[in-house]
Image (cartoon, rainbow, N blue to C red; front, side):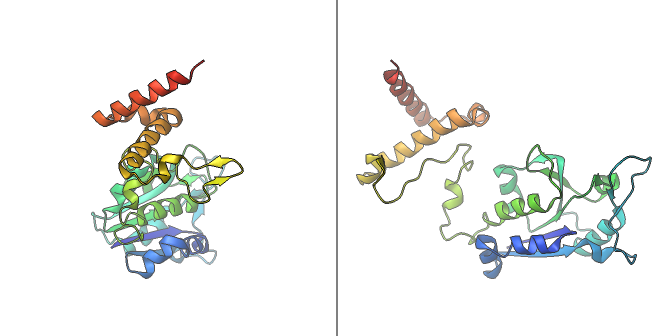
Length: 249
């Protein structure tokens, strides 16, 4: 079981996000324990202030160090094994490999960044990782926290009905996932590939692998460049290339 604490100034937003689908079921079944912590509980003024103006001047507001430090004192208590994440556009890019890394931890804390930024002492002394879900700016760190929560929780043993499902997801082995189809066999002239309906599972698996290779090559050249082809992959890529050459006028 993994424990994930989320420190936020918008606890209702996180509570709503974790009350549905796989994340909710994971909590109910004891696969994951998720706690939502209102940062304002660790303030000491009547306005429950979590931000202040930047030293040296400038625009925007800065997240204060004191309430964050006190919240982490309660949640972590100096335990160096706990991963403390700060959601921040300057951080390490969150991907499936990072999700798998976090999924092996016993305790993860996610601090939702806000305002213009955080007091630098939070980065220097209180967090272990800074995490970004992409090169864009959001109003706050709650949406990234929910993304991280979902990705990590679904990797816990028992979170999914099909225990092998995470190993077949996109990015599980460095490739995008193959196409999926369901009934009806034909709709508006759009048909399911015949090979998927013939019952030959060896050929189906071969087709699916070839489509993984094709999709990754065509859609994600960054992943394709980093991927190391197996001997079977090389054979399938050659078949793809021969087929595409035959189709050229």
